[in-house]
Every structure is written in C-alpha cells, then in structure tokens.
Length: 366
Image (cartoon, rainbow, N blue to C red; front, side, top):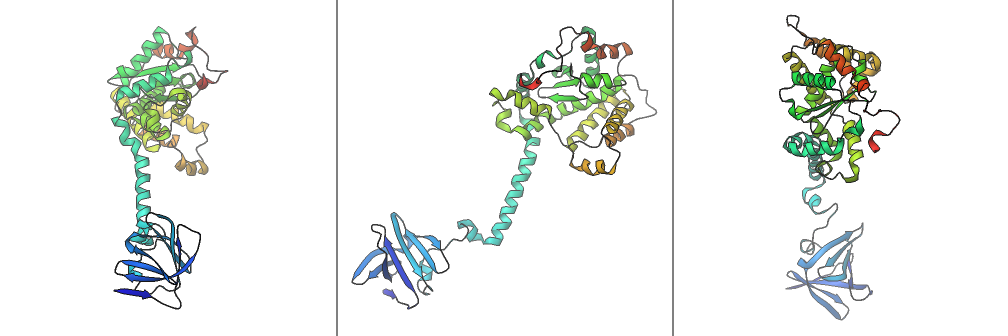
C-alpha cells in the first residue's frame, strides 16, 4: 500500500548524485521502499535499509544512500510520525555513544581510561620478571662496555670488593660490582647485575659499613628487577628488547638517571638491612650515611617535608631511621672488611695507572 507523505510544514529536497540540481520532492512509501515524486516524475524505487544518516542541524536532517556517491535526501521541518520509524537513527556523538547514551558512555570512557592508566603504571612490574635474564645481561653489556676505561682496578682492591659483595649476596657470580673513577657521591645499578660505586662515594664514606649498606641497597634493586622496571617505564618495551642502535648513549643516560619510586627504594633498603643483618654488619654506618645526605640536602625543614611527597626517594632522615631501627644491641656485629681491605678499596682509583679520569668530557656521548 502506497502512502504519500504530505505535510505543509514538512519539505524534502533531493540530490541524485549525478547532477548538482537540487530537487524539491515528496516521499511516497511502499512498505520498506519509497519513491521520490517530483512534479510528473517519479524517482526510485529506493529502500530505507540502504539509507544512512549523514548530518543534522537545527532545522534539517540529511541522509545518504549506499553505493550512490553524492545522493542526498534532506528533510526539513517536523518529520511525520508515519515516516519516523522507517528512517535510519541519527548520531550525535558516534554510534556506540548514541546507543549507550552520553551519561553511560562517559562512565564507560572514564572506566576504560582508568584501566589503561593502571595497566600503563603497573605493566613494568609484571613485565620485568618475565623478560629473560639473558636479554637483560645482553642489554647491560651493550650499554656499559668498559665504561670508557673508568673502572678502577687493582688486585687487592678487586679482591676486597669481591669479598664485600660475597658477604651481602648468596649468588654473586651474576653481579659485576665496580668502583668508577668519577667524583660523585652516588651508586647505581644497571641492567645485567652491573653495580657502580662512584669514587666520590668511596672517598666520603667514613667506614666500609657505610659502603656495605649502599651496596646492599643496589643489590636489592638488581634482585627485585627494579632496574628493568625503570627502563620499561622510561623507554618502553620495544627499545629495551633490542631497538638500541645509535640510541645507546640516550638509553645509558636514562638508566643512570633511573627513578624507581619510593616503594622500590624502600624495598631496596629493606633488602640491604636484611643482608647486612645476615652478614653481621652493623647498620649504624649506613644510618650515618643517610644522615649526612639529609644535612647536605637540608631536609630538616617544613618545605622539605612537603616536597618529599613528590620525590621518587623517601627522605634520607626516614631511611636513616629505618637502619637505626634495625640495630640490635645484642648482636655481635663485625666490620664488613678489615682496615687493610677497606684501604685497598679506597686506594683503587689512585693506584690504578691505567684508569681514565671522570672529568673534562661528556661521558655518555662517547
């Protein structure tokens, strides 16, 4: 049964896609089909199922037609009730948003965004442990090499350093601990179990027990895979797994400036406290080391307390307190090394005639 749509306040215009002529037409529906009536001419038949929504303004709605480029049917004014259910649904924001409704779609978008954020933040923690150790070792070898010839090396110093490392770790064979000839109060863990104690740290330490606590901390980063987590967070999986090429210097810079987050730093401190206790090494030396850091960074003020919450490291005073708390007055502590062994470590860089200086060059662009 044919039904001509006639309404004085409703009008229809049509472009057939072949010419630029805008035709004023009327719609004649026959079930799911329709014709467009223009004076004495009839265009069609067309099928409502082949139509699709194109655009909507305050007064007009336009539709296109499948497989006919440029075909347009524009309806103006109030659409007759009999025609509404035959027309394609309009879209305001997009198909799935219109189906859900703006409110539900907004909630869904927030939920998905939160999930993506959580995955992005936590991915390094579950990805790092499943990356083969051989991959990490290869990455460390590629990045570090001989560090520009700046590893200090004397027989007595290396023997003492190995003894200290062995006392703090039950499986030291996969660790490479080096003293680096750079006057920097720092230590760092790099991929592949590589741990650098900088000469500035060695010279400013008042006892070998201080260095033992710092070394235990860096070993903790290695054992907990914090190094790989940090690289994954900063650089992404593809670069870490082999896309180094000419970016070695940039990756090494990122590794040296790795920020693990306060939870990881506390975890590494806990590792250091535990292994020092097992080795009967007093934590008081390391406590003193962190107190010196606190004095150097002027932590004993309200501003430092507030900004600590934005720092990747806990306050040095907090860390000193943790090592102090681990002290057991009933324990028979022994020095980590003899005075001669400690002296051999302190004199390594001075007594190595072949070591390169850490000054006057751009270390990581070589």
